[in-house]
Image (cartoon, rainbow, N blue to C red; front, side):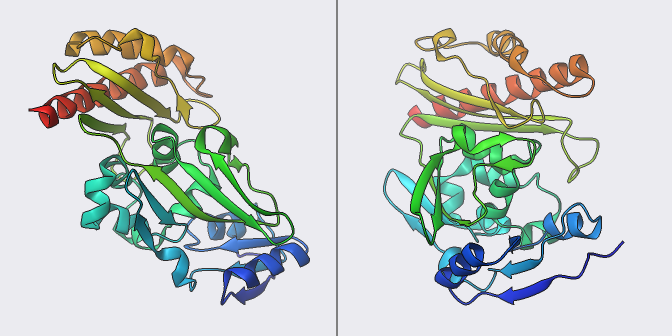
Length: 287
């Protein structure tokens, strides 16, 4: 199928986008178009106006803000994967995004688009959640607001973005010294949607004992799911076997739609692998 007839505007500024979203009826923002165009071809989305923001170079920038990185909504997946500063400062994002489709997809796909699409199987929504990212939104009539990733993803393909709002920036904290990361995804073939996946951030003290942990699952509920319970591990230095037991306990919070027992089993393996990787890297950084 082909999309229904639609008007199209290539935006020249953020201000123009905000005006169009405020004044037009049923307008949709398009950037990389990796998800929206498919939905339009299937007639699952039928906007009257497409506002193309891919030419807004100002939203493709990144800034090192000390304890966090500020990323424009138009930062490409491939940039997260290959930019030396980003791979150093945000290794979980760089590791996870390699599982997103194939290179052709990552060359076009954008960070803001992935977050706004709110696919519970998506790698970058999970990264934003586990990293405790903050999403910045702008509206012409209501100004700017910030939403934590924990509150941003509402349900299947539904994020806290109003019709007249544009997702502009993402603030992603950089982990402190003694931190490690891990990301694991199981799929039938590389580049396809994951059966289950997990990401983890672990921080340790100089003795290798866990001081903080955040971990989450993709494709385990109607949104990316934060599952870590710090009380289970803080002050401890779990062995790989202990991490596996902890992971099996944490995945009980998962609510997969199909084959729940199977998905939980795969998710437990992904989560334990991610936690073991993160803990090991944190200990190595302390040495």
